[in-house]
Length: 506
Image (cartoon, rainbow, N blue to C red; front, side):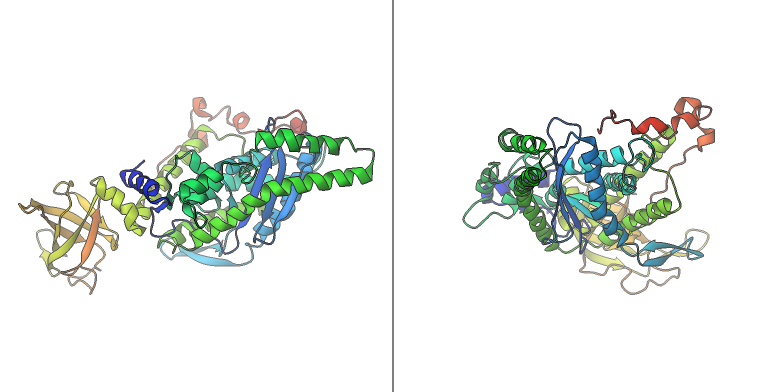
């Protein structure tokens, strides 16, 4: 936990309400996100029990598995879920746009929009990941056939779960993660995973403090768990008898319909409070203005959505059960690069996030007191424009002379530290030499060089392009890491007997 977040948590306890730790929204929020609130049966491996799903507060559709241990009913649930999710995904594939690549020498196309799924908490993402894993290899023919939409749903759920691991992605979001990214509460990180308590701190009812609202949310009779786990007391006292009553009516259609209606009403009562909290959280997030670089990250989601859609349309196979050594290394490298870029972009977009780096000595803010925008360095083979500016700051400057700094106000411009002169009055003079972002001539365009009186932030964090690493091709990979001669066996798809009903869902 950073110093700034720890301070915000302490202030939340003192004030009785969650404190903002962001001035802008760092996630993309779709105009019409698909909210999915799942429930799983306790004691079973990711056995779906029910789900409430829809793209608007008044469009909730309840899906129920009356006998979650019944394998056929599980896949019937998957088919019913597919009838909601797949049309939502397809609705974002109507219009594409041309994107210039290779410095404008070529173009590629991507969809102008992409889907967004919202679940209550990280456990909801895990539920979808396991559901995708258990369905994407199923077949619509042969032994134990499933509806043709089931394996397609599994592939899309796997895609979304993988995007959820990508730092900065907004394709699949947990509401608790989205809210704690922007607010700090007076409770622990574990308690923040409980959506009712978290929203109690952020937006407490009139007359209550955040702590009081969170305490009330601990009562599962009025604030059911946000899923996929259910309350044990609810399981024992109400759910189990309802499932048994449904199972006992197998030979009586009228009694079975009545038992199903009772079970459906019971599960709707459990899911409806979380459904309302999800849309309440959407409203709170919508009240924050989006960060300047959010749209760029959403473009990455649209690129990934387009690529996967094209892969599916071309008849490509489902994602493998496990990555090979090289594929895993490439994926890890890609996630690490994305994490670094995401941290920098958040800091550039948000002064509150940058404040954490200022406390760590990775950035400082100062006022420009001198500027020489016409300075030319003629010591090399040809003269180059190298303006210098002087800043005065009251913050500690821990960067050494010669270090390269960047400013969120002019991210394409580098600033080399020339002098750092601490003063007796607690102020420090910093002289910077600028390069880049000023054209190719010897005269800087207006506004490209900071002017006297500007207040600027300079940091060691860079939003520059990070080149990808070099990895061996599959045929050049040693056999010890999944290459030849065992590559075919390592990457083989499941055998024809994969339809065996004894396979675990986890």
